[in-house]
Picture (spheres, rainbow, N blue to C red):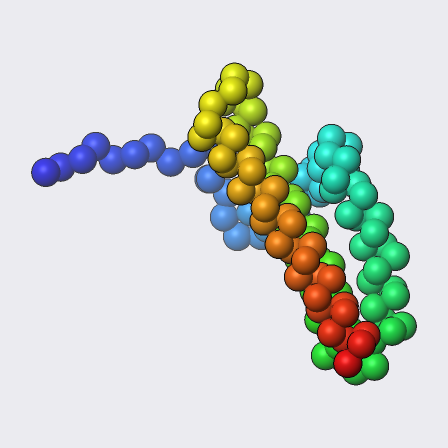
Length: 128
């Protein structure tokens, strides 16, 4: 059975250094949008500004410092993905729908797991 070929996005045409250059600035746009529109991301980013230097000071070894910093950065990564899911879902519909609620709740749960992970990592490193 032959399926019709799906058309690629018109935004996928760049390659090489031009693609890397564009991707970098799209990423900066994403950070700006998250910081401007997402309270949770702003709070977690400000917490990271305190936690990363603190991890460098409190960690006794390179591995401890890396684990502590990685756990904080993971929270930011998951929050960015959660915010992206919420924005995409809100673009589709603002009406209440059980699948939209499920997607948003799962994104929120992922953020919670990343926060618990950070707390556990920091607790193990600092109390061990």
